[in-house]
Image (cartoon, rainbow, N blue to C red; front, side, top):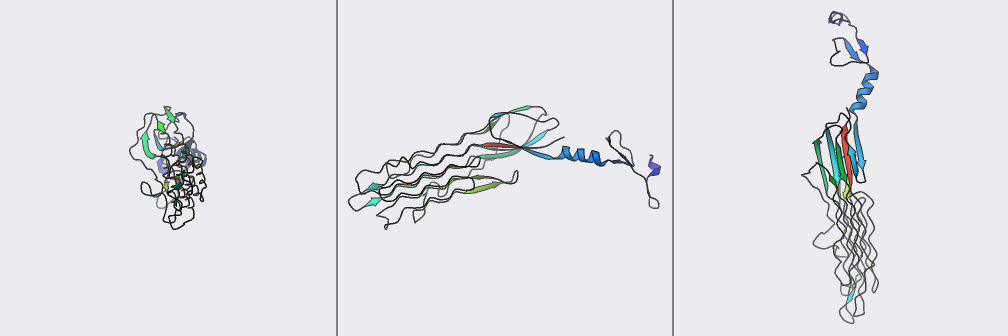
Length: 284
């Protein structure tokens, strides 16, 4: 076919459909076949790989840029505090533990060399800590491990904190505050969440309030444990179930009529969930 066979304002032209159309072989009047169009579409398809264990990853042939979302392991929840006595008629419930923070999330687009190799380390989830033997909640839950990718440095970091962080884990009714969730726009919205806080134990001196209920974790995070009744320990926080989410905080023990605090080490925080890496690319 030559250019003089193309259509014009008065006459229809003719098109030759070919399978092996390329930049070198293209001429006016040639068209891409349906078969080659499908093959091209497959090559332009966006692929997302989910990596959940530490390993090496080989960059596919023809790929020169990748989108990466990496999430560290979520923190473990904090154990609840013990119930104590301040005399024959004064009982104070133990504090509820804070839920675990989410793992830190980072995103970026990076140039890469086709067939190159990236070494990936997935951060472990943090371990929930045991309850305390005094009225305050225990030490913070174990920190989640860092997720690392060789040769790639990230600038922006997102982290989700539990409710009331650094101020108070419970509301005015002794109930644990709920965890929070952040939605990341990658692969149909990836969620990272903090755990729910534990409820405070029963306190006579706080207007005879019943023990608090544990807060709900954000999406995929652990729930906080309930506060204990008088002379009873609180319940444990639950474990996170979604990558990078925090464990729930343990519930505080109820106040005691005894002079010794209740041992509340059983009201531990839940464990955080391990990290993850998502890699997206167009195949060529």
